[in-house]
Image (cartoon, rainbow, N blue to C red; front, side, top):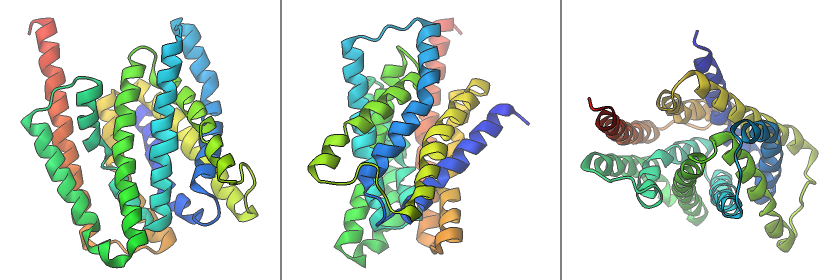
Length: 301
């Protein structure tokens, strides 16, 4: 079996378990504390490899680079992941996984502004179809109360801001690479959460004993090892093939939520998930066609 596929299978298994374990931690660990710990330690796990990449590629980071990667950390760690955990705390793990997995749709919009990538009919069509899928997933749950509706809004914001993070990360990685970008943005982003914890008088490291094992799992496996296996997997496969593995995440996460949290898999969740995936496929195919056209122009084919 292809080594890259094995590494990426490990990655998607770990990533798919995040919402379930995050739901277990609801009420035990504050979302900001959770993200501070898991991204600080996760970033430190990736740091030795990032330093090796900097040395091997002889990369020199400027003050402007550090400021930009700090902004990436804010968008991902401080905003997107906090929105995600708040949404998990107030809704369902399966719903959170499906809505968050729609983030490739919002990469397209942010890439237009950040990377100056063109918007075409196919991309806009994919976005519209994907948004319809998101609405199908949650529209019947809007009557479950203001807290639940607030959680849905947080999940949508999480997907949008993660799309922005992806485009910003892609821009920074063009000068360095993904390992360096993630390690530095994880560490800096987590440290920027410290003022929030201090101002709101939230605990920084203290947590109930029953939260220790789930937190250790999220920190070392989901944030540390999963990103490592993802990067290693991509050395054996191209990025396009690697990203396709993540189509499994909303399906697998929903199954895990059903198995461990007894969450019902509704027909609207299934239909909405399929519609979202159709939208993402259309958007990614449009990107692939654009890449092939640019390659043909460069090579003269």
